[in-house]
Length: 312
Image 1 (tube, helix red, strand yellow):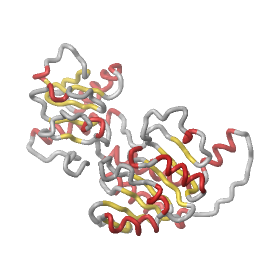
Image 2: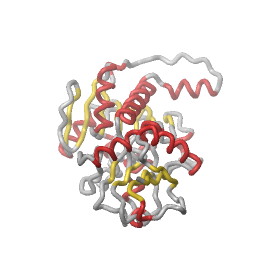
Image 3: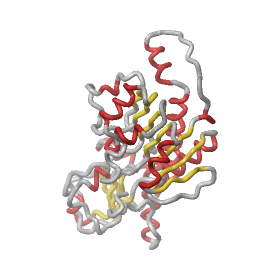
């Protein structure tokens, strides 16, 4: 079975092949643009940013796998094959890494990591008073899918007071659940550290704007590990500059790589990371795809299938 891979440069294909062979020796791993592969022989693809129209050229394609948790680089293609399953990257490795990153982000904000970083850059030994503890900071997670649930449980276990906001109510012990537009304002009002883990949809893009940020308590902080499109960046900067927000950790941006001219790079209240929150190693992602293919062959349901109607 031929699997085309386009995730990183062509030079990574031998490594992808090694990990896929360990998971399922039947899989023939080829580079996305391998000229020796006939389109009709392709059954599976693992991609991140396929050029528009290419997916539609494979008449016997069975499943499209995203090499990351998001699928927006795939579904922006007007001709992507909607009649076939589109599977988002997942599994314990991806979920665990996202949860760990969110925990690290929240702890970094609570413990003034940005101020210490700036002091180190200037070789200044300063006394930074720790005014709040973990148990005194209420975290609110926007988006309670597999990634959000895992993050919420880890934050809860460390001692944060955690709530989640999603389209439908969730039942997670020790995590307060808010659901729907009618409960959004109340969710924001009780949140000291807002974590965005939403999928990118027409309803969620631009949701974090001046109006939403104003509903957060004075001195709140913000973590974005969803998509840059969720945030009106000018409004976020204004909230930071005014003092309404005390800090932010941003892993995703409306334009990536983040341009050198962006004020986020040097803002004294912002920690920038380069979209690295939850990317599992190739060994785990290869195993996840191989197991999903086996499940599909057995007639079992696929994991993390994208729903075009819901947008995630």
